[in-house]
Image 1 (cartoon, rainbow over the protein chains, first blue to last red):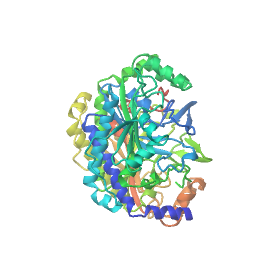
Image 2 (cartoon, each protein chain N blue to C red; image 1 turned 135 degrees about the vertical axis):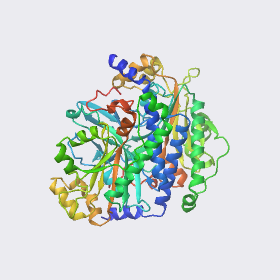
Image 3 (spheres, each protein chain N blue to C red; image 1 turned 90 degrees about the vertical axis):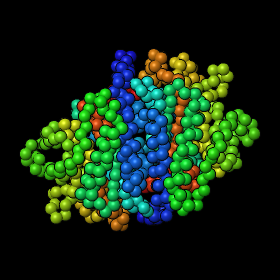
Image 4 (tube, helix red, strand yellow; image 1 turned 180 degrees about the vertical axis):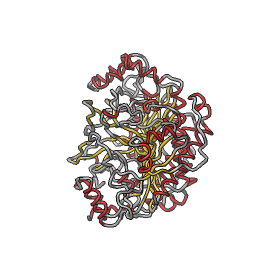
Length: 309
Length: 309
């Protein structure tokens, strides 16, 4: 009962409704903004023969249905590429829940959840630069909306948000690494006073490699200032069958579960595209000025939580 | 490859973008409407020690994490009751994905999905009548918005939607059963020309029994006309510990997984409340005039599907 009492005293704090209002404002402003720009909104997909293999090891999250093994969605990356094949679906987004059964090693990160939602978008025939411009536009729009409509909430939370008029700066990961070492994201996040982009990370096979400079990648992160850390990852995507197969091999991946996805790629049906996924809880945490991601949800899904409910 | 070709020819049909626009309009109009009325929007919960036991048998959907057994969300009913305990959370909603691993027996229903999303709301200290008035208000609002903003889409789909000016009629299930037998929902759905409510179903333990007339229940369904079938279920909730325990016993339920929920009820922390959950795909199917729920999604999650992606 002691743990329950502690939980309910957390729910009773004055900042709880303020954070909920900021969350609501973020969700509606992102949704309205992209719908107004002609994006099609999809419903989430939670189980599939394939999901994002991710760039770091998590426990498997798999269920069985009628003799089939279905993975729970770690991100909708492949479903976004496939959805772009549909008539009229040149620009899409999803408010997409993701399940990632993180290992307890990262329980002190303050920025990871076992389940969270991404505001996940993808644009046919877009470049890295197009995707980054889209992110900068909707992030700035949401911040303006929160500043305009959540003045009392920000005041109660003791949070001052600038308007971020200037363009978000863009850095290359290799330059930051050379200057600040392995923890360059953390160092830079603490030093900066505006959200900023970092490009060129070596990670999942589906992020497009630069054909004219192999070993470099057309991908990016958005990182929040004031030490709030990573907020979004995105990229141009690989869509060429031969390149996809080569890159899966380089990462020693088993192609078997990807048979249908690879058949679509081989038939030339995947488009060039670029997109990204904004972590909604991380954005709300940044906007609310909270230091632990646990503080922006009613139900604790932080890594290694005891799962009261 | 034949199955893939068939799938991609479905994605290429002219109605695909029209349905997506109707979906987007439904999602934004529901969200904006309830936020404007002061509801707090929560993020979905997908895994928990407990979830809705449901009124019909489905396969279990369970994963393991760090020695804990976590059920995938069949509905957010208990999390809605718990969320109402939070400061300022008198009225809440969630666009909540649900996983229900339906048995293949119902594969011909045309109205069931293995995963779908509910527009799920709950109001502290509300009655059955309050919840039904809320549903009627947001359903009519969304229909007006779709009629106003999706004229071309409705025309392309050959769909005429009336404005449904009059109040939605309300029937009692025992009266309809006496007149039309076991399939009264189907018979009435085909006969009616307006959405209508049916009250008093015997189902899950958490729907409130009428204390002055045991064996009758303060719950309801919303049913669409023209044969489109059930669209929403809702109820007043049981919140009294002794009643909850009795009703779980009556349904031969194992109380063990519910230990924390029952401790909260025993401490008197659960409020009286009422709410409901609108199936988003079913609403889009009704608005689009489609006869199978598979036709309103890009990824087929109908019962016993072969799971291409």
